[in-house]
Amino acid sequence: MIPSGIHQLTNLQSLSTFALANAGSGSVTLDEINDINTLQGELCIMDLQNITHDRIRESRSANLSKKKLTRLELVWNPLPSYKSIPHDEVVLESLQPHNCIRQLVISGFRGLNFSSWLGDRSLFSLQELELCRCYYTDHLPPLGQLPNLKQLKLMSLWKLRTIGPQF
Image (cartoon, rainbow, N blue to C red; front, side, top):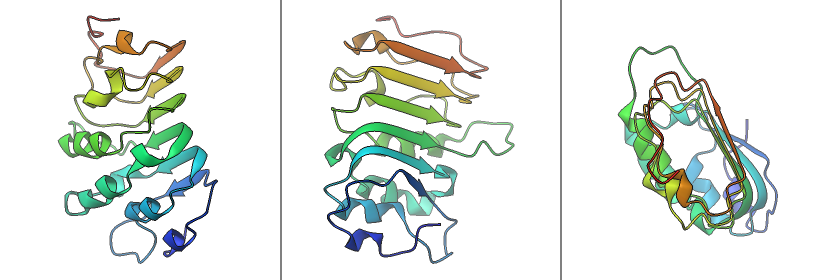
């Protein structure tokens, strides 16, 4: 568990794993990443299911689009659920990475729709995309608009029926 106050390390360049705790536990929140402007390389944000509706501001203020990350992993713990969680879509939308991202992993996402930025040309550096355990998503965005995408891994997308027309 990462302690609260990590935002004071404003020159931190590497933070491989960032695990979010349940609300009220007194530990670090996702908005603390905002002040670390020198963060680069790889980052895995785990336990995104802990961002509840009343904590959505956290994911927006993480400001990942300003970070010079080359690999980003966004992980929800796939808790037993028999329905999609639309709130996950809002969280994912707010975690748009910088356009220099080369590898992106989205795991355990429980929404129906991926974010609009996922098939956007602004992610022109994206070379590898892995989508796994996204059980409720039935279609993919137009991944053909990602000009440098070389590797696409799709695992356990049980309801996937269509891939965007641009692919």
